[in-house]
Amino acid sequence: MIYLDNAATTFPKPQTVYRKWAYAMSAYGANPGRSGHKFSQSTAEAVYKSRAKCAEFFGAQPENTIFTMNCTHALNFAIKGIAENGCHFVTSDMEHNAAIRPVYAAAKNFGGSCTMFEASADEEQTVYNAERAIRSETVALVCTAASNVIGLRTPLRELAALCRRKKICFIVDAAQGAGTLPITLKDGANIICAAGHKGLYGPMGTGLLITDGKFPLNTIIEGGTGSASESIVQPDFTPDRFESGTINTAGVIALGEGVEFVLQHTPEKILAHELALCRRFCDGTKKIRGIYLYNDITPQNSEQYAPVVSFNIGNVPSAEGAAMLSTNGFYMRGGLHCAPLAHKKIGTINGGTIRFSPSVFNTADEVERLLKTLERISVKL
Amino acid sequence: MTIIYIQSFTQAQKALSYLQKHGIRCIVERSFGRSGCGFALKVTDKNASRAEVCALLGSIGVSCDLS
Image (cartoon, rainbow over all chains, first blue to last red; front, side, top):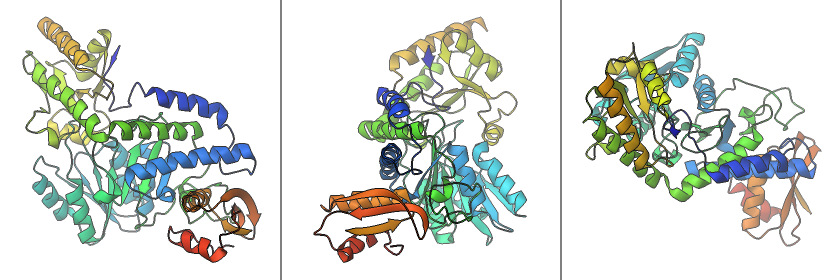
């Protein structure tokens, strides 16, 4: 089996993550931050250690580093938390449903609206388009760090500067960028929403909401936090405010190991490795009749992309193409990848695409084997 | 012994880490006080005054006001 569906979730995880998760299941089995006994205390300390590691990674304070179930969960907290009556959101036309659905729901529930701007390969044009979409009632610009369909990166620093100038909140969907692209609070985002189980190599069921604290968020879930329990009102301090109920303790402790793995290998080196695999894939497929690429990553344009390539095999619907590859031992995802806007943009809304998304664990040899398989399949078409 | 009551475990642990970096011995315990369920940062270092501890904690945004 050659797994190339890392944009959905990375697999395998580093051995340190597996070991930590298994260890945490038994060694940190008490409810953290709830009881006063040593078992609960040591579990809470292990959770804090992971929180501090994640905070360091994103340039945040530990208390502003909130564990969530996934990136979607974090985006819902951020988007619905900042919504107010008559509010207006600005998003790009490359967003994942994880961002666009909560934006539309929040706008509807609060009698507000949303304007979508066109993200372009030309960064200046993207910023210009975003600025034109901002209105006096705009509360936030919600933007993906990189398209999960064609990997196109958005100019985060420039958009952050725009949001600062306009005094609106900049919410970054870092599902496809955290762990490879430079996404920290120091780069200008006010809120970063990240999946723990993708580029950070943590377990599924983990995510992060990172905030600089400049834009207070209302809660969308309330409940027990183990703190300020005398009050029936949700605490106003973080992370407790957004961590009601028992957290995925073993998951978040193992996530800390994933982040440590990324820090040790460095996001820059991981990105360089994955982009090199994408370039080889793109270069190789161009020589195969019937393979259609929707984003061509080359040495000249690598900086514009996250390591994701969308393609199709002739006129074969993407789900069927992915199934053919699965039969041959290559695991990739076909379909719309929960991002219909991006597919409308590239003209694949009806059939979707097959997505090639390597991780740090994939090798050049695996890409060569995939290319040979695609060559064999395309001859039969 | 100086005891600082802190509502959040994360803040208490952040305070503990910071004080320990400054060579001040302390522990975090679960507490139930005037402000309900929370955490007590117990400074066991006899050489550290409350004023010194609170000044250090203030620099990282941890308040001694609940105490």
